[in-house]
Length: 134
Image 1 (tube, one colour):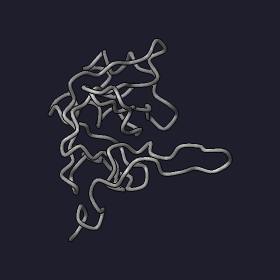
Image 2: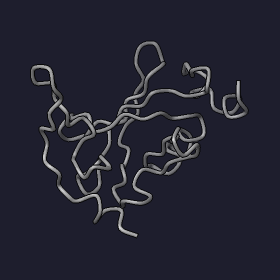
Image 3: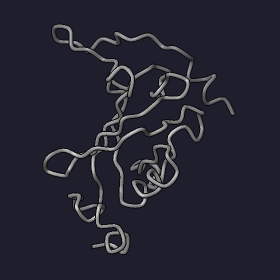
């Protein structure tokens, strides 16, 4: 049990994996479309609750990842649910700019299996070079 769990019983009620992570699905509050999947740790979930915007744990960066910190495409969280086992989160979000994916698409789930190949079926709404230009 972490220090956060001791002061926040709702955190202790969740089932965290061995690395202290829980899967989080981001779903558009208006359309119901799943736009993203990421992981959260206790700190990122607590910050999400505190600030109202989605904050994830980036395994590749090994740090908190405030969705939209580089792209500006933040996710305003409208509701947080957990499944019956308490081991997966579902975030109902409003996606700023309508782009959740770093590829410039509405959703990270844009590949569809057609026969024996994965085909990109959703359009790029904005060139990632424009989004991440520095």
